[in-house]
Image (cartoon, rainbow, N blue to C red; front, side, top):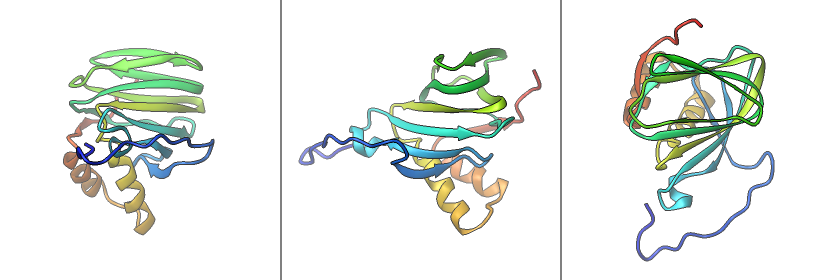
Length: 157
């Protein structure tokens, strides 16, 4: 959150700009907006995913919204699969178990967290990966710091 005596400042980021971020499973990301830059309102990441990239099944209290910039993704939400192609929007309220998998051509997406804060997980993952490969235990502990509960592997479709 922004302190009362601090003012939010407008900003613009060009394509390719933003703080480096990453998912433990291999998504290459750029942090485009953070809780710090939006007064806590949201976090926004741009992610580029290799073919077959998949998150584990997980849950957190913040809502997520994805806009698919390019490619095909399959989202698993509360026991159901939802396909999403270029131009699609997928919304998942906070608290629901979910995960996603990129299609055979990979993809590119925007991920918005509402409210902001948990986007810091991806910034911190990038910092860990800059130092070493990290471990599943380290990433699980880091996720817990951001309220992300790892449930297990994403089910097969």
